[in-house]
Length: 134
Image (tube, rainbow, N blue to C red; front, side, top):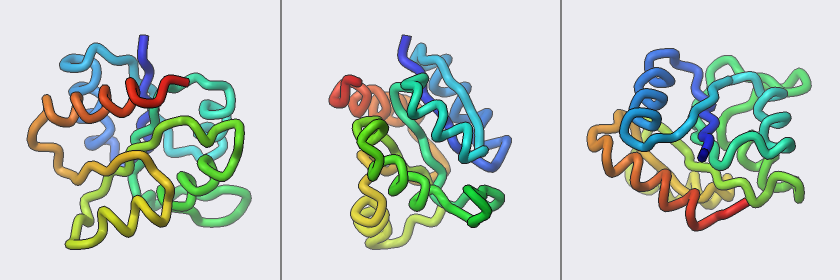
């Protein structure tokens, strides 16, 4: 069973993503915005993919305020977690953001909110999981 870790600070967005991924994709989901827990789940290979919200309002790591870009950079810089695929999710999609966010973070994909086409969302998640077997 494929497990997606949803790192999202908005409970409504979390519920929407979780419902789409479980109902349409047949995937298992976990969710947290606790950065320590994200790191633990990634290191213990308890998720096959991370959906990472770019603008995490409340997340801190070792006393520092961090966003989804920073967390993705930390995961990609660690040899133990570098191969874990990460899809950035953001509502702040301006022209050029996609390329900048992907380049800055090293993420494997990018989805803008709100997710309108649920099937396309599931397909993108599944394609990236299949392209990055852990």
